[in-house]
Image (cartoon, rainbow, N blue to C red; front, side):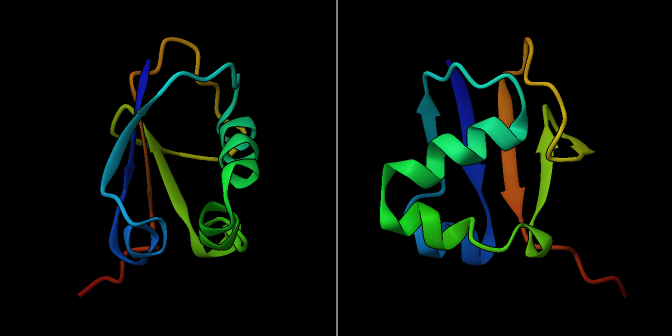
Length: 82
């Protein structure tokens, strides 16, 4: 089981801040494909990956990152500095 966290507009589009999933995805991108296939709201939230950042177990990473032994994946828009 893996916790998937959604922040900012991603959470608004999906309608939940967090869910616990059973997944066979080996990479973040495979997880995104699984989520996109679930419902239209997921497809919409993940339609433009250039507008998203991802962290696996609280480490910022890329969409090709492995999910082996991962307990948490978080999706969020890029942070603006200041």
